[in-house]
Length: 519
Image (cartoon, rainbow, N blue to C red):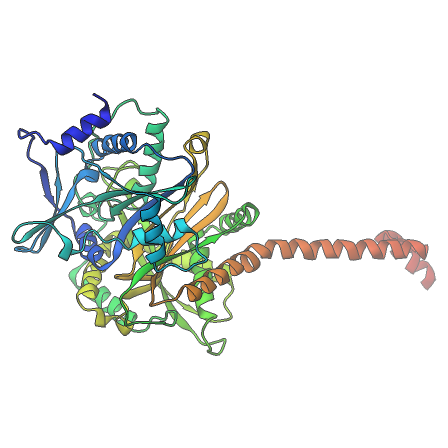
């Protein structure tokens, strides 16, 4: 019996002697995501555009192997209404079933989708998956006060005779961005034969709060109260893009910001030469672009909030591997006053310095519970946010981009393109940026809530960001080099002109000539 057949047998005919599933209560951060996902924020999607048709049974077998290696992928989220608590319930056996859509079914989805006609089919399907909410509590299956949901879903769409769209959709509490990147890399590793067999890894079955180094999350009670008050008061003074429709039901949409290798290289070099990271430049460009949409005097300030997400795996105790599945990110919230006169590198330096200082002071650990508390309060009381928009910040960025290089295996399996991102149409920022440097090119997937913001509005914002990054940030070095070249041209012309007049060009000779004329 093949591995896939064994998996199907286990799924369809469970052994009555199977051990009871493992059950643990979620941590504080995981609880916040369990609250956020039903409202539309935290649906993580990893999508692959393929030119080769996948073998479904073979793929299901591979995914079962991944579920053995990473038990949380086979878990279910359980909500117990009697105690208002969420649990991870992890059965002993893997279980994966790919939902397949043929050409006709895919065409029907594309025709009925809210996507614009000029958008590629795979882009429309990406947005479709970002808005498939399998964790809405009204859709839960369960008895009495309990309901369970899988954390992992897989769909395969047939776009044409030469294009297929494979999508992994996950609950963010079980899979943050780093885990999604690990999912893709491990899947490719197994396909390439790099992993002979699946072995259950000893992954920490605890939330991030239980792995924070001793003392780094400590904060006096009075300080916690002051910070909560500060966060709350600041929220009423924060600027944002103009809302297009704050009343209609929302869904997530996507625009992409792409740069060529030369511009990417110069942008990264500019960040490195100034001792800052790419996240600072992206945040600065976003805020300047947003400020430029306002009809205010140039000197008038607006206060924007930026959330920077940090992958904490390498700084926890014990240290976790980079592909350890679960949610192990923390966040730092900074606010910045922006005018129409701000220069991108100055603001980028200010953004990154504020973030770096906060991180050095352990704010990503000490403020974790505060931000989780405020997130849940905003979910319960949307009226606490401007126009009940549930926008808690203007922008979210990651501290570090994903660095990815193509290889021979990806070409063999027909991987044309891939995108990883999460939905934000519940609680969250106006725009969430998921940045990757792929084959030397910056590729940002930017997710925003619609119709709170329109596609045209966000496309204009992203185009403005790119123009700022390329013309104002990257172009600084080129302009300096251009001015130097212009000076060289002028100097060469003067030397040529002096030679025609038979005048000395050497400074010492010029001095002697002048002295002789005096005599």
